[in-house]
Amino acid sequence: MSVTQDDADRDHGVVRKRPAGWRRFRRWLVLLAAMGVAGGVTWALLGSGWFAVHSVVVTGTRLVPESEVLAAAEIQPGTPLIRVNTARIAGRVLTIRQVLAVQVSTSWPNRVVIAVQERTPALAVVVPRGFDLIDAYGVVVQLVQTRPLILPVYTTSAPVSSLRGDPDVSAAAAVLGQLPAALRPTVVSVSAPSPDQVTLQLRSGVTVVWGGPGDAAAKAKELAILMRTHARYYDVSSPATAVTS
Image (cartoon, rainbow, N blue to C red; front, side, top):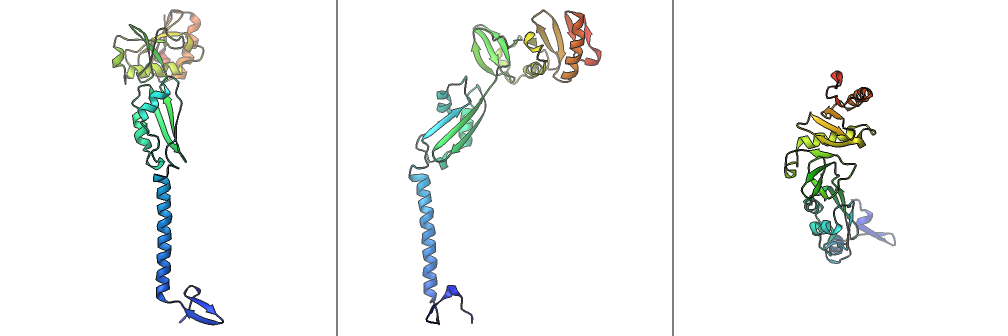
C-alpha cells in the first residue's frame, strides 16, 4: 500500500498515517472557511453600505430636466448596487415623451449611470400656441413660439396628436435628411399626402415633388440639372421621367 504526502507526515524517517478523523476535520475547516468568505461577501454587497447607491449620474439631457429623469428612474439612495434592476429603471425613464432611448448601467462601487438619448426635432407643426416640434416618428418634442429656421413646417390637416407613428411624417423626415446640403436650408415647408408623395416648398416659391425616400442620389442629380431652367415646379419622383414646368 502506498502512502501519499497528504495522508502522512514524516518524523525521524518514520511514516505515520493520519487518522481518518483528521481528514474529516480538515474538510469541515475548509467548508467553514468557504462559508465564512461567502457570508462576508454577501454582507459586503447587501448589508455593509459599501456597495450601495450613493449617486446617480444622468448624461445626454438637453431638453429634459435632469430632475425629471431622476424622478422617473425612482432609484432609492442606499439600495445595494447588486439589487438595482437596470432594465426596469430604463423602462420607467422611457415613459418620458422626449426620450428616444436610454441605457442604465451600474458603476462599482456605488454609482448608477443613466445615459439618455433625446428625440431630435425634424419638423415644425403649426398649433394655436406656436409650433410643436416633432421628431421623425411624429412625437412632439417641444412647443416653441417661433419656428427654428432649420426646421421646415410640416403641412397637414391632421391634428398633431394623431401624427405619432404616422408613416407620412417618417417619409417626410427621411427625405429631408437625404437632401443635398445646398438645398436643405431652402426648404420652408413639406407635405406628404402619402409616403411616396413628399413635396417640398422652397423659399424661392419653387415646388419640388420629391416622391418617396428612395433613389435619393438620382433625384438630387436630376433636380440639379432641371433647376438650371429656373422653372417654378419640378417633379423628380421618378428620376427617369422627371418633369418641369
